[in-house]
Image (cartoon, rainbow, N blue to C red; front, top):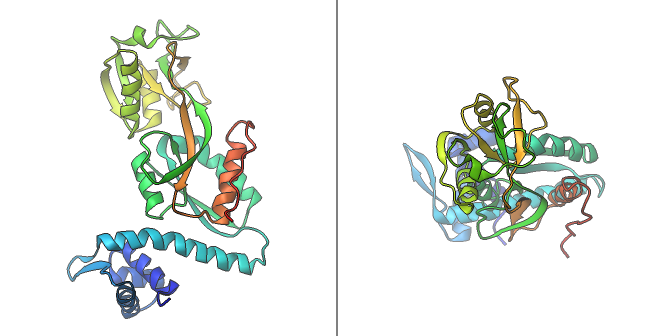
Length: 309
């Protein structure tokens, strides 16, 4: 096989930098070396990977996008091979990039970072935040090996395992007339203003929940920030629905809030760890997945992702 890891590495660098000069600076080599490697790769594969425009740099072609999605995991496995050989089969090494849904990250990332790295200190664990769409695209094009997200609007080609299940709850200011109840009906709030978390697909999910009990919400404010929702509710500007529950019963301003279970029967929401169907997990990704399965489920599971034969 004439395609080399060097060619693929320089191709990925150029795709991420957007210019030959940017890739050369990143790799600390000459521009001609990058250009030659890409030209050789295009000849070996028989496709055009980039459209070259002198004033605008590189524009990746559809064929290039497809090759990029395959090249990233291939290079990750090559890096793992080298790292494993250097450690003589001992501890896990290398870099692992994990995506996390924006509103989940403040609840999960610090916990898994400290816990996993304590077990595998030679692994460099990085994370990126994003929406459901962004995280799935990051998986499919190889920028992330794993993602922590919700079981909602999943694209084809995404494999997943359930970490835990949860239900949405109602958030009220502490002086709201319903704040003292053990459960609150969504229908009792139908005529009140809603502060809506609008971080895709949160808007669609929460409006679907309200629609399921026959409510067309009176949306007063929208925000993509979890804590802004809590601050607005604490100030009495409306009620809200959230999935994750903060440990503190106060907003960032220090104003009290009340989190109430929903009286109506609402389906559970699954929190997942996901990766592309067509990609074999690296050892470090498999170890991270198993760590999450054992530690983010309340101790209720003994599942493990076995190594592929």
